[in-house]
Amino acid sequence: MKVVVIGAGYVGLVTAACLAESGNRVVGVDQDKARISLLQAGGIPIWEPGLEDMVQRNLQANRLSFTTHMDSAMVGADVVFLAVGTPPSEDGSADLQHVLSAARQMGRCLQPFTVVVNKSTVPVGTAGQVQAVIESELQVRGVEPGGFAVVSNPEFLKEGAAVEDFMRPDRIVIGVPPGEAGAAARQIMTRLYAPFNRHHERTVWMDVASAELTKYAANAMLATRISFMNEMALLADAVGADVDHVRRGIGADPRIGHGFLYAGTGYGGSCFPKDTRALVHTAAQHGLQMAVVEAADAVNVRQRKVLLDGVTRWFGADLTGKRFGIWGLAFKPNTNDMREAPSRTILVNLLRRGATLVACDPVAGREARDALESDLAAACTDSAEPLKGLMGRFLLVKQPMDCVAGADALLVLTEWKCFHNPDFDAMTARMRQRIILDGRNLYDPEVLQAAGFVYQGVGRRNELARMGPVGCSLAESERLADSARAVMPA
Image (cartoon, rainbow, N blue to C red; front, top):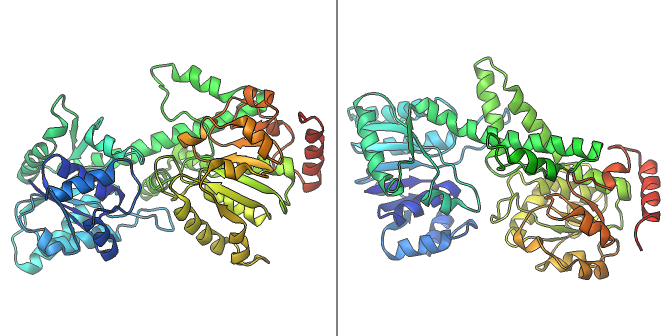
Protein backbone atom coordinates (compact mmCIF):
# COMPACT_ATOMS: atom_id res chain seq x y z
CA MET A 1 0.00 0.00 0.00
CA LYS A 2 1.06 3.58 -0.48
CA VAL A 3 0.92 5.60 2.72
CA VAL A 4 1.49 9.33 3.18
CA VAL A 5 2.31 10.71 6.62
CA ILE A 6 1.89 14.46 6.98
CA GLY A 7 4.13 15.71 9.76
CA ALA A 8 7.63 14.38 10.41
CA GLY A 9 7.69 15.08 14.13
CA TYR A 10 7.69 12.49 16.88
CA VAL A 11 4.45 10.67 16.06
CA GLY A 12 4.67 11.13 12.30
CA LEU A 13 8.24 9.92 11.99
CA VAL A 14 7.67 6.82 14.11
CA THR A 15 4.48 6.04 12.18
CA ALA A 16 6.19 6.46 8.81
CA ALA A 17 9.22 4.35 9.70
CA CYS A 18 7.22 1.52 11.27
CA LEU A 19 4.72 1.29 8.42
CA ALA A 20 7.60 1.20 5.94
CA GLU A 21 9.21 -1.53 8.05
CA SER A 22 6.04 -3.61 7.59
CA GLY A 23 6.35 -3.44 3.80
CA ASN A 24 4.42 -0.35 2.72
CA ARG A 25 5.65 2.46 0.48
CA VAL A 26 5.63 5.48 2.78
CA VAL A 27 6.22 9.15 2.02
CA GLY A 28 6.75 11.55 4.91
CA VAL A 29 5.74 15.17 4.27
CA ASP A 30 6.80 18.18 6.28
CA GLN A 31 7.12 21.91 5.57
CA ASP A 32 10.38 22.16 7.52
CA LYS A 33 13.01 21.99 4.77
CA ALA A 34 15.91 21.51 7.19
CA ARG A 35 14.13 18.59 8.83
CA ILE A 36 13.35 16.95 5.51
CA SER A 37 16.97 17.37 4.35
CA LEU A 38 18.18 15.73 7.55
CA LEU A 39 15.76 12.82 7.10
CA GLN A 40 16.67 12.36 3.45
CA ALA A 41 20.29 12.00 4.56
CA GLY A 42 19.36 9.30 7.09
CA GLY A 43 19.46 11.47 10.20
CA ILE A 44 16.58 12.04 12.61
CA PRO A 45 15.56 15.22 14.49
CA ILE A 46 14.64 13.43 17.72
CA TRP A 47 16.29 10.87 19.98
CA GLU A 48 14.34 7.63 20.11
CA PRO A 49 15.91 4.18 20.58
CA GLY A 50 15.94 2.12 17.37
CA LEU A 51 14.35 4.80 15.19
CA GLU A 52 17.42 6.03 13.32
CA ASP A 53 18.42 2.52 12.24
CA MET A 54 14.88 1.83 11.05
CA VAL A 55 14.75 5.06 9.05
CA GLN A 56 18.09 4.36 7.39
CA ARG A 57 17.17 0.74 6.61
CA ASN A 58 13.93 1.68 4.90
CA LEU A 59 15.46 4.60 3.02
CA GLN A 60 18.01 2.20 1.54
CA ALA A 61 15.22 -0.27 0.64
CA ASN A 62 13.30 2.54 -1.13
CA ARG A 63 10.24 1.94 1.03
CA LEU A 64 10.57 5.26 2.82
CA SER A 65 11.09 8.75 1.42
CA PHE A 66 10.61 12.33 2.57
CA THR A 67 9.52 15.48 0.77
CA THR A 68 8.18 18.98 1.31
CA HIS A 69 5.78 18.64 -1.65
CA MET A 70 2.39 17.30 -0.62
CA ASP A 71 0.90 17.31 -4.12
CA SER A 72 3.43 14.85 -5.54
CA ALA A 73 3.38 12.73 -2.39
CA MET A 74 -0.41 12.30 -2.58
CA VAL A 75 -0.42 10.70 -6.03
CA GLY A 76 -1.71 7.14 -5.69
CA ALA A 77 -2.03 7.30 -1.88
CA ASP A 78 -4.30 4.73 -0.23
CA VAL A 79 -4.00 6.14 3.28
CA VAL A 80 -2.95 9.59 4.49
CA PHE A 81 -2.06 10.11 8.14
CA LEU A 82 -2.39 13.52 9.75
CA ALA A 83 0.36 13.59 12.38
CA VAL A 84 0.94 17.30 12.94
CA GLY A 85 1.21 19.10 16.25
CA THR A 86 -1.75 20.21 18.37
CA PRO A 87 -0.10 22.58 20.86
CA PRO A 88 -2.13 23.97 23.76
CA SER A 89 -3.84 27.33 23.41
CA GLU A 90 -3.85 29.82 26.28
CA ASP A 91 -7.21 28.50 27.49
CA GLY A 92 -5.93 24.91 27.52
CA SER A 93 -7.74 23.82 24.37
CA ALA A 94 -5.93 21.99 21.58
CA ASP A 95 -4.82 24.33 18.79
CA LEU A 96 -6.05 22.71 15.56
CA GLN A 97 -4.63 25.21 13.09
CA HIS A 98 -1.93 22.81 11.84
CA VAL A 99 -4.41 19.93 11.49
CA LEU A 100 -6.90 22.01 9.52
CA SER A 101 -4.18 23.61 7.42
CA ALA A 102 -2.87 20.18 6.44
CA ALA A 103 -6.43 19.04 5.67
CA ARG A 104 -6.90 22.06 3.44
CA GLN A 105 -3.72 21.33 1.49
CA MET A 106 -4.73 17.69 1.26
CA GLY A 107 -8.12 18.60 -0.20
CA ARG A 108 -6.41 20.40 -3.05
CA CYS A 109 -4.81 17.19 -4.30
CA LEU A 110 -6.84 14.33 -2.79
CA GLN A 111 -7.65 11.45 -5.15
CA PRO A 112 -10.44 8.92 -4.58
CA PHE A 113 -10.64 6.63 -2.70
CA THR A 114 -8.41 7.77 0.17
CA VAL A 115 -8.59 7.08 3.86
CA VAL A 116 -7.67 10.16 5.89
CA VAL A 117 -6.44 9.17 9.33
CA ASN A 118 -6.30 11.54 12.28
CA LYS A 119 -3.20 10.34 14.15
CA SER A 120 -2.72 13.61 15.99
CA THR A 121 -4.23 13.92 19.45
CA VAL A 122 -7.38 15.94 18.81
CA PRO A 123 -10.58 16.70 20.71
CA VAL A 124 -13.90 15.08 19.93
CA GLY A 125 -15.39 16.54 16.77
CA THR A 126 -12.12 17.17 14.95
CA ALA A 127 -12.80 14.48 12.33
CA GLY A 128 -15.93 16.37 11.33
CA GLN A 129 -13.96 19.60 10.97
CA VAL A 130 -11.32 17.86 8.86
CA GLN A 131 -14.02 16.37 6.64
CA ALA A 132 -15.68 19.76 6.17
CA VAL A 133 -12.39 21.43 5.21
CA ILE A 134 -11.53 18.71 2.68
CA GLU A 135 -15.03 18.80 1.17
CA SER A 136 -14.81 22.58 0.74
CA GLU A 137 -11.55 22.20 -1.18
CA LEU A 138 -13.01 19.41 -3.31
CA GLN A 139 -15.96 21.65 -4.10
CA VAL A 140 -13.58 24.36 -5.32
CA ARG A 141 -11.96 21.77 -7.57
CA GLY A 142 -15.34 20.63 -8.85
CA VAL A 143 -14.80 17.12 -7.47
CA GLU A 144 -17.79 15.16 -6.21
CA PRO A 145 -17.66 14.46 -2.45
CA GLY A 146 -17.55 10.91 -1.17
CA GLY A 147 -14.13 9.90 -2.41
CA PHE A 148 -12.64 9.75 1.07
CA ALA A 149 -13.36 8.87 4.68
CA VAL A 150 -11.94 10.43 7.83
CA VAL A 151 -11.11 7.95 10.59
CA SER A 152 -9.56 8.36 14.02
CA ASN A 153 -6.54 6.24 14.92
CA PRO A 154 -4.96 7.78 18.04
CA GLU A 155 -1.40 6.92 18.97
CA PHE A 156 -0.44 5.31 22.26
CA LEU A 157 3.33 5.57 21.97
CA LYS A 158 5.56 5.96 25.01
CA GLU A 159 8.55 8.16 24.36
CA GLY A 160 11.66 6.05 24.79
CA ALA A 161 9.79 2.92 23.66
CA ALA A 162 7.83 4.24 20.68
CA VAL A 163 9.20 1.86 18.05
CA GLU A 164 8.49 -1.16 20.24
CA ASP A 165 5.01 0.15 21.06
CA PHE A 166 4.15 0.62 17.39
CA MET A 167 5.56 -2.69 16.20
CA ARG A 168 4.06 -4.68 19.10
CA PRO A 169 0.98 -2.73 20.16
CA ASP A 170 -1.22 -3.72 23.06
CA ARG A 171 -4.20 -2.26 21.17
CA ILE A 172 -4.96 -0.44 17.93
CA VAL A 173 -7.90 1.91 18.36
CA ILE A 174 -9.68 2.86 15.13
CA GLY A 175 -12.86 4.89 14.87
CA VAL A 176 -14.68 4.75 11.52
CA PRO A 177 -17.68 6.76 10.31
CA PRO A 178 -20.98 5.09 9.42
CA GLY A 179 -22.04 4.26 5.87
CA GLU A 180 -20.32 2.93 2.77
CA ALA A 181 -17.30 5.19 3.06
CA GLY A 182 -16.71 4.01 6.61
CA ALA A 183 -17.04 0.38 5.58
CA ALA A 184 -14.51 0.90 2.78
CA ALA A 185 -12.14 2.66 5.20
CA ARG A 186 -12.42 -0.24 7.61
CA GLN A 187 -11.36 -2.70 4.91
CA ILE A 188 -8.31 -0.60 4.02
CA MET A 189 -7.28 -0.06 7.64
CA THR A 190 -7.71 -3.78 8.31
CA ARG A 191 -5.30 -4.53 5.50
CA LEU A 192 -2.83 -1.86 6.63
CA TYR A 193 -2.66 -3.17 10.20
CA ALA A 194 -2.81 -6.87 9.29
CA PRO A 195 0.93 -7.42 10.06
CA PHE A 196 0.35 -6.16 13.61
CA ASN A 197 -2.61 -8.47 14.19
CA ARG A 198 -1.04 -11.63 12.89
CA HIS A 199 -0.87 -13.54 16.19
CA HIS A 200 -4.02 -12.16 17.73
CA GLU A 201 -6.47 -9.38 16.98
CA ARG A 202 -5.41 -6.12 18.64
CA THR A 203 -7.70 -3.73 16.81
CA VAL A 204 -10.54 -2.17 18.78
CA TRP A 205 -13.14 -0.83 16.37
CA MET A 206 -15.49 1.96 17.39
CA ASP A 207 -17.13 5.14 16.21
CA VAL A 208 -15.00 8.20 15.50
CA ALA A 209 -16.03 10.26 18.55
CA SER A 210 -15.29 7.39 20.90
CA ALA A 211 -11.83 6.91 19.39
CA GLU A 212 -11.04 10.61 19.74
CA LEU A 213 -12.14 10.54 23.38
CA THR A 214 -10.29 7.29 24.14
CA LYS A 215 -6.90 8.94 23.68
CA TYR A 216 -7.67 11.73 26.14
CA ALA A 217 -9.28 9.34 28.61
CA ALA A 218 -6.22 7.07 28.61
CA ASN A 219 -3.78 9.90 29.27
CA ALA A 220 -6.02 11.45 31.92
CA MET A 221 -6.26 8.11 33.74
CA LEU A 222 -2.48 7.62 33.73
CA ALA A 223 -1.85 11.19 34.84
CA THR A 224 -4.36 10.73 37.67
CA ARG A 225 -2.58 7.59 38.92
CA ILE A 226 0.72 9.49 39.05
CA SER A 227 -0.81 12.43 40.89
CA PHE A 228 -2.60 10.09 43.31
CA MET A 229 0.70 8.49 44.31
CA ASN A 230 2.31 11.90 44.67
CA GLU A 231 -0.43 12.86 47.11
CA MET A 232 0.14 9.60 48.98
CA ALA A 233 3.86 10.45 49.09
CA LEU A 234 3.18 13.73 50.87
CA LEU A 235 0.98 11.94 53.38
CA ALA A 236 3.60 9.22 53.81
CA ASP A 237 6.15 11.83 54.80
CA ALA A 238 3.72 13.38 57.24
CA VAL A 239 2.90 10.10 59.01
CA GLY A 240 6.33 8.44 58.78
CA ALA A 241 5.41 5.84 56.16
CA ASP A 242 7.31 4.79 53.03
CA VAL A 243 5.37 5.38 49.81
CA ASP A 244 7.39 2.71 48.01
CA HIS A 245 6.05 0.10 50.42
CA VAL A 246 2.56 1.49 49.85
CA ARG A 247 3.05 1.27 46.08
CA ARG A 248 4.04 -2.37 46.28
CA GLY A 249 1.15 -3.16 48.58
CA ILE A 250 -1.59 -1.66 46.44
CA GLY A 251 0.02 -2.60 43.14
CA ALA A 252 -0.20 -6.27 44.05
CA ASP A 253 -3.97 -5.95 43.77
CA PRO A 254 -4.78 -7.06 40.19
CA ARG A 255 -7.57 -4.48 40.06
CA ILE A 256 -4.92 -1.76 40.48
CA GLY A 257 -1.63 -3.10 39.09
CA HIS A 258 1.84 -1.59 39.37
CA GLY A 259 1.96 0.69 36.32
CA PHE A 260 2.20 4.47 36.77
CA LEU A 261 2.20 4.26 40.57
CA TYR A 262 5.63 5.83 41.08
CA ALA A 263 5.87 8.99 43.14
CA GLY A 264 8.30 11.61 41.89
CA THR A 265 8.65 15.21 40.80
CA GLY A 266 5.56 15.04 38.59
CA TYR A 267 4.80 14.11 35.01
CA GLY A 268 5.84 16.10 31.95
CA GLY A 269 6.30 15.62 28.23
CA SER A 270 4.15 16.48 25.25
CA CYS A 271 1.06 14.47 26.24
CA PHE A 272 -0.10 14.34 29.83
CA PRO A 273 -0.02 18.07 30.72
CA LYS A 274 -1.48 19.15 27.39
CA ASP A 275 -4.10 16.41 27.10
CA THR A 276 -5.46 16.69 30.63
CA ARG A 277 -6.03 20.42 30.15
CA ALA A 278 -7.59 19.87 26.73
CA LEU A 279 -9.97 17.30 28.23
CA VAL A 280 -10.99 19.77 30.93
CA HIS A 281 -11.63 22.39 28.24
CA THR A 282 -13.71 20.00 26.14
CA ALA A 283 -15.84 19.15 29.17
CA ALA A 284 -16.34 22.85 29.96
CA GLN A 285 -17.61 23.43 26.43
CA HIS A 286 -20.35 20.93 27.22
CA GLY A 287 -21.16 22.39 30.63
CA LEU A 288 -19.30 19.72 32.59
CA GLN A 289 -16.47 19.84 35.13
CA MET A 290 -13.75 17.20 35.17
CA ALA A 291 -13.01 17.58 38.87
CA VAL A 292 -10.71 14.56 39.16
CA VAL A 293 -8.67 15.52 36.09
CA GLU A 294 -8.40 19.13 37.26
CA ALA A 295 -7.14 17.93 40.63
CA ALA A 296 -4.57 15.66 38.97
CA ASP A 297 -3.19 18.61 37.02
CA ALA A 298 -3.09 20.82 40.13
CA VAL A 299 -1.24 18.15 42.12
CA ASN A 300 1.28 17.81 39.30
CA VAL A 301 2.03 21.53 39.30
CA ARG A 302 2.52 21.45 43.07
CA GLN A 303 4.69 18.33 42.91
CA ARG A 304 7.40 20.10 40.94
CA LYS A 305 8.21 22.12 44.04
CA VAL A 306 8.79 19.17 46.38
CA LEU A 307 12.55 19.02 45.90
CA LEU A 308 12.78 22.80 46.01
CA ASP A 309 11.14 22.70 49.41
CA GLY A 310 13.79 20.24 50.56
CA VAL A 311 16.57 22.50 49.28
CA THR A 312 15.23 25.58 51.07
CA ARG A 313 14.65 23.66 54.29
CA TRP A 314 18.31 22.71 54.34
CA PHE A 315 20.06 25.72 52.85
CA GLY A 316 17.58 28.58 53.27
CA ALA A 317 15.96 30.70 50.58
CA ASP A 318 19.20 32.40 49.49
CA LEU A 319 21.36 29.88 47.62
CA THR A 320 24.14 32.25 46.64
CA GLY A 321 27.45 30.40 46.63
CA LYS A 322 25.79 26.97 46.76
CA ARG A 323 26.62 24.36 44.13
CA PHE A 324 24.19 21.61 43.15
CA GLY A 325 24.72 18.58 40.98
CA ILE A 326 21.80 17.70 38.69
CA TRP A 327 21.34 14.17 37.36
CA GLY A 328 18.85 14.12 34.51
CA LEU A 329 17.07 16.89 32.63
CA ALA A 330 14.67 15.27 30.14
CA PHE A 331 11.14 14.65 31.37
CA LYS A 332 11.79 10.90 31.30
CA PRO A 333 14.66 8.57 30.33
CA ASN A 334 15.37 7.45 26.74
CA THR A 335 14.32 10.76 25.22
CA ASN A 336 15.70 14.24 24.73
CA ASP A 337 12.24 15.78 25.11
CA MET A 338 12.20 18.79 27.44
CA ARG A 339 8.54 19.73 26.91
CA GLU A 340 6.95 20.31 30.34
CA ALA A 341 9.93 18.60 32.00
CA PRO A 342 9.74 19.06 35.80
CA SER A 343 13.45 19.89 35.76
CA ARG A 344 12.66 23.20 34.06
CA THR A 345 10.76 24.54 37.07
CA ILE A 346 13.46 23.33 39.44
CA LEU A 347 16.38 24.76 37.46
CA VAL A 348 14.81 28.19 37.05
CA ASN A 349 14.03 28.46 40.76
CA LEU A 350 17.50 27.35 41.86
CA LEU A 351 19.27 29.75 39.51
CA ARG A 352 17.08 32.67 40.52
CA ARG A 353 17.98 31.98 44.15
CA GLY A 354 21.68 32.30 43.31
CA ALA A 355 22.75 28.65 42.97
CA THR A 356 25.33 27.23 40.58
CA LEU A 357 24.15 24.07 38.78
CA VAL A 358 26.29 21.36 37.23
CA ALA A 359 24.08 19.03 35.19
CA CYS A 360 24.41 15.77 33.29
CA ASP A 361 21.89 14.15 30.96
CA PRO A 362 22.89 11.42 28.47
CA VAL A 363 21.08 13.03 25.50
CA ALA A 364 19.10 16.15 26.45
CA GLY A 365 21.86 18.64 27.27
CA ARG A 366 21.45 20.93 24.26
CA GLU A 367 17.67 20.84 24.44
CA ALA A 368 17.79 21.57 28.17
CA ARG A 369 20.05 24.57 27.69
CA ASP A 370 17.73 26.00 25.03
CA ALA A 371 14.64 25.41 27.18
CA LEU A 372 16.27 26.92 30.26
CA GLU A 373 17.38 30.03 28.41
CA SER A 374 13.84 30.51 27.12
CA ASP A 375 12.32 29.96 30.57
CA LEU A 376 14.72 32.37 32.26
CA ALA A 377 14.13 35.04 29.62
CA ALA A 378 10.39 34.81 30.31
CA ALA A 379 10.66 34.60 34.10
CA CYS A 380 13.41 37.13 34.82
CA THR A 381 12.27 40.33 33.14
CA ASP A 382 12.52 42.05 36.54
CA SER A 383 15.70 40.30 37.66
CA ALA A 384 18.71 42.33 38.71
CA GLU A 385 20.99 39.68 37.20
CA PRO A 386 21.08 39.59 33.39
CA LEU A 387 20.21 36.42 31.50
CA LYS A 388 23.85 35.86 30.57
CA GLY A 389 24.83 35.79 34.23
CA LEU A 390 22.09 33.34 35.12
CA MET A 391 23.02 31.01 32.27
CA GLY A 392 26.67 31.33 33.27
CA ARG A 393 25.81 29.45 36.47
CA PHE A 394 24.38 26.50 34.53
CA LEU A 395 27.11 24.08 33.50
CA LEU A 396 26.73 20.91 31.44
CA VAL A 397 29.13 18.00 31.90
CA LYS A 398 29.33 14.58 30.25
CA GLN A 399 30.07 12.38 33.26
CA PRO A 400 27.71 12.01 36.24
CA MET A 401 30.56 12.08 38.75
CA ASP A 402 31.65 15.48 37.43
CA CYS A 403 28.35 16.86 38.76
CA VAL A 404 29.08 15.94 42.36
CA ALA A 405 32.58 17.41 42.62
CA GLY A 406 32.32 20.17 45.23
CA ALA A 407 28.53 19.88 45.31
CA ASP A 408 26.55 20.94 48.35
CA ALA A 409 23.81 18.53 47.27
CA LEU A 410 22.82 16.24 44.38
CA LEU A 411 19.35 16.40 42.84
CA VAL A 412 18.16 13.36 40.82
CA LEU A 413 15.52 14.52 38.33
CA THR A 414 15.41 11.79 35.63
CA GLU A 415 15.76 8.05 36.20
CA TRP A 416 18.33 7.25 33.50
CA LYS A 417 19.89 3.80 34.01
CA CYS A 418 23.35 5.32 34.39
CA PHE A 419 22.20 6.97 37.64
CA HIS A 420 20.77 3.84 39.27
CA ASN A 421 23.90 2.39 40.88
CA PRO A 422 26.50 5.12 41.47
CA ASP A 423 29.67 4.74 43.50
CA PHE A 424 28.52 6.28 46.78
CA ASP A 425 31.96 5.95 48.35
CA ALA A 426 33.45 8.01 45.54
CA MET A 427 30.66 10.54 45.90
CA THR A 428 31.38 10.87 49.62
CA ALA A 429 34.95 11.87 48.83
CA ARG A 430 33.98 14.39 46.15
CA MET A 431 30.89 16.15 47.54
CA ARG A 432 31.19 19.17 49.78
CA GLN A 433 28.11 18.03 51.69
CA ARG A 434 26.61 14.55 51.52
CA ILE A 435 23.03 15.42 50.64
CA ILE A 436 20.93 13.69 47.98
CA LEU A 437 17.47 14.86 46.97
CA ASP A 438 16.11 11.99 44.93
CA GLY A 439 13.16 13.07 42.79
CA ARG A 440 12.76 9.59 41.29
CA ASN A 441 13.15 7.38 44.39
CA LEU A 442 16.06 5.46 42.90
CA TYR A 443 17.87 4.75 46.15
CA ASP A 444 17.25 2.99 49.45
CA PRO A 445 17.03 5.62 52.21
CA GLU A 446 18.42 3.31 54.88
CA VAL A 447 21.47 2.38 52.79
CA LEU A 448 22.28 6.02 52.06
CA GLN A 449 21.72 7.19 55.61
CA ALA A 450 23.97 4.39 56.87
CA ALA A 451 26.63 5.63 54.44
CA GLY A 452 26.46 9.10 55.96
CA PHE A 453 24.18 10.82 53.45
CA VAL A 454 21.25 13.03 54.25
CA TYR A 455 18.60 11.67 51.92
CA GLN A 456 15.28 12.99 50.67
CA GLY A 457 13.20 10.93 48.28
CA VAL A 458 9.52 11.50 47.57
CA GLY A 459 7.52 9.99 50.41
CA ARG A 460 10.44 7.89 51.73
CA ARG A 461 10.55 8.78 55.46
CA ASN A 462 12.57 11.83 54.59
CA GLU A 463 14.90 13.59 56.98
CA LEU A 464 14.45 16.95 55.26
CA ALA A 465 10.67 16.63 55.13
CA ARG A 466 10.59 16.33 58.92
CA MET A 467 12.68 19.44 59.45
CA GLY A 468 9.87 21.93 59.19
CA PRO A 469 6.80 23.13 57.30
CA VAL A 470 6.92 24.07 53.65
CA GLY A 471 7.43 27.77 53.15
CA CYS A 472 9.09 28.52 56.49
CA SER A 473 10.97 31.79 56.79
CA LEU A 474 14.60 32.15 55.77
CA ALA A 475 15.66 32.57 59.41
CA GLU A 476 13.71 29.48 60.48
CA SER A 477 15.04 27.54 57.52
CA GLU A 478 18.61 28.46 58.45
CA ARG A 479 18.00 27.53 62.10
CA LEU A 480 16.66 24.13 61.06
CA ALA A 481 19.58 23.64 58.70
CA ASP A 482 22.09 24.40 61.47
CA SER A 483 20.31 21.97 63.76
CA ALA A 484 20.31 19.22 61.16
CA ARG A 485 23.98 19.74 60.29
CA ALA A 486 24.88 19.30 63.95
CA VAL A 487 23.62 15.71 63.88
CA MET A 488 24.81 14.92 60.36
CA PRO A 489 27.24 11.94 60.38
CA ALA A 490 30.87 13.02 60.16
